[in-house]
Figure 1 (cartoon, rainbow, N blue to C red):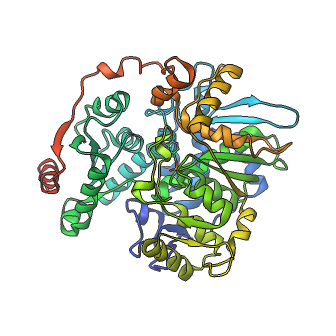
Figure 2 (tube, protein in one colour; figure 1 turned 180 degrees about the horizontal axis):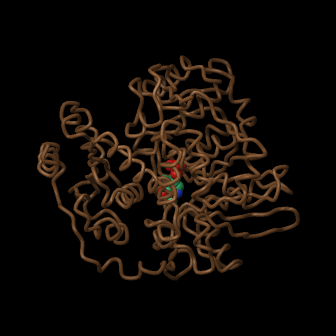
Figure 3 (cartoon, rainbow, N blue to C red; figure 1 turned 60 degrees about the vertical axis):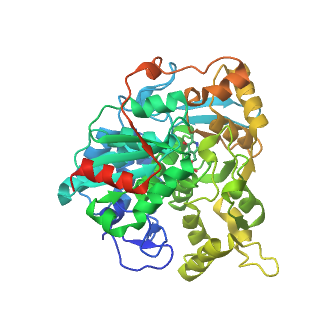
Length: 488
Ligand SMILES: *Cc1c(COP(=O)(O)O)cnc(C)c1O
């Protein structure tokens, strides 16, 4: 039986994993979900305890990508999850574990554990999924004898993860817009030092919103988009979510010795992509007690998980914080959870997310005049939340450094702060480390008075030769640029 994928809003043409791999939203504007969540038995979990990370990734991917031959999946994951790709571990970490755990503190029956997800090439957790996506895309495009031109805008993290995943891949080019002279020197160096001929960095004279507007304008030109074979790799991509499910299993299996035990996860959250994978792992039967959503000052998700009201923010209300990868106005993967919360009632999901577009949100609190009362069921899914602000980040970074000699980044600090508000005796609390501190050295300096440590090989990244083009915020010009480089 081939696993089928359906839109959260009811679009019905059944699609396989490979059918939806290269695309984004479903034609009706919804997000793809499998027709059901495959279940993992206790026997299977036991068998998985001794697998390598790549082996575990294979076992999980095979349950979702049922239209790809299993031996091909083995090869793709073996090529992706290697110690050479995830080589930026701290000196005392075991690189071969890919996402090593580190026990932070154990007062009484409480235990706080950090799971390192940022040892990949761009030092952030997006590499965990994006590196697999690069290999899956190349594999699928070769089979279809097709090519793909990825076009996107970035203010830092996502763009660099995409470029490092797609560099040198056959059949793929990446055109990435970024705001000229608005990114940190480290971020520019990471992206612009790539010399691969299939990577095109375009620095736009403007701000990030100008870049995003250009991407929207090009995407709305359907004829151009089709002719130039334009695609994206944003966080709603289903394969990215599945790839992220793997490290929840790995974290659980590494932190426990038998399947009677539970763990909880705290996840620094923005677009709800990372923690959505945790929700799916839990739906598959992984013994997770709590899934704690940690937000920064942009607390759209915290508000929902406290009140049942989902209220997206306007651009002017969206703050620039020192954990910038969580600065969101709405959470693009949230619709997947709402679909499950509403027990797959696609008509209601469609109505609620239409309301987001027309009225800026919805209310499931059950109060008079609300759109439903499902908020009372949120706890059944393990979800809870907390919020952390700049002062919390600084004090958490200082505290973890002084007590453990460990530097953590600003996003992870949000996670640690919130995790300590939610831990339970006897249930290990795993905080996902979503970036290494070297990426956010300005705030690290503010907190600690010294620069963040850098992994080997990154010491002089700013002095490497850079390759990028500068362009006005001009839609016609970017179209000409793309066409000139694709030859299509
Ligand atoms: C992208 C990102 C996040 C947020 O992840 P979501 O999947 O959007 O919730 C958190 N921390 C870092 C460092 C990131 O790059």
